[in-house]
Length: 189
Image 1 (cartoon, one colour):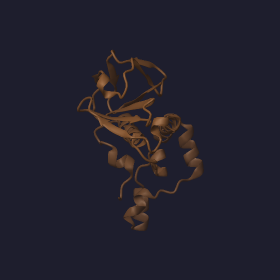
Image 2 (cartoon, helix red, strand yellow):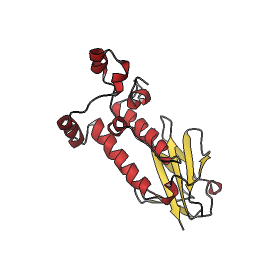
Image 3 (cartoon, one colour):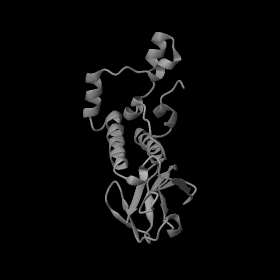
């Protein structure tokens, strides 16, 4: 593939912030799936294609083979407003949450749950069903409001916890997920 993942997922009519949200949500989907995820290092930094390298070498694959200059990369990571820092920070946070959840064990089952047409939702559960995660990803350009049906969960529970904020979510309340956003909601016995 002669394009970076960030560039292939970016929509030219969207602003940088929306394209970053799309990219992060795509990675959150990958990280919520069964198996052992692998992230290419250019993904960790949201790299764009290296067009000058293609022109210099004549090799199309050079577009996604950018060589990082350590001081430049450190400067980009030090600027909290840069794309590189925003993506790296978000992915680091997602990975930290993921590694502390037993339902994300590579061998734990996954099930796709239909909540709305715009939401891609994955239910991950431990084999004993004592821990479950609803990984909900908004693939649309609008905020989506919805309720989680009790039937979506393997056990009857009154509330879930947002794994990123710690906020408790009642199953009776309406939840909103911003355009191209996501949330992971979990419960444990």
